[in-house]
Length: 343
Image (cartoon, rainbow, N blue to C red):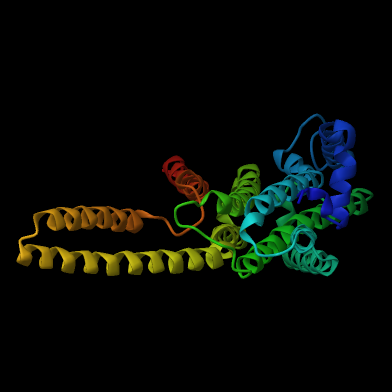
């Protein structure tokens, strides 16, 4: 079976493929970002909310929120396809069914994209209507002709980011479902399973990077209770999306490790009893054979005890933990620097 990311049938997947056709992706993505950034900045210049010739980092981040999610959806779809190709030999399904499973994995339901967009848009509306001063956190002013233009761009931002977020949710659920298909697992060979860990690690890292970009662009968000709470929720979600989808495979590996340990332990008991019998009989050749068997089984049990039961490489785990810790370290550093400057 040939696994490809082209089985995605969502509008975001089709858009990503269309944009990246003939190698034009980088130019198109950069062009959309530059145009959005220019429109946002020019609008703020035009209404006098921002001195002409000055630029705001947060506007660049908001502008990136329109093309970058589409770019990332294409990247994530290809990563999901590679992960599916790796685990395919472990699934007792036909090639046709495997293609169908992959198609469902990379195709986010439209209703989910719509639901996430509505929730995100509703949250943003409530947030800024309840506290109009919150617009100043993002250096945006909604007056005169700039209001409909800025709101339209922010709506595109919400739709694009929501599509990426819903993709993450759908993939997390999909990976969990695939693990329930009871793929054949081996505690001695985790390679085919690592693809899903790489995929969830990419999702977690993307969430963290997006959050860091906003907090670097708007440091005052760390002093805003709602902004700080949003960041903590995003960190928790990033950690959950890395670990939770892999729990099914983890449980399978734990069960397999337990089974192998039980078998080896019983054999060790048998070998020990044989050694005792050989000692009592004074049978030196048998004693030597049983002793070697006990040594081999002891080595096997020690190796089994060291076997990891989460389907990720140690470097992947350390990388994700480091990424999760980075925003926390950044917040602490900023807090300390603020206190020192205030003193």
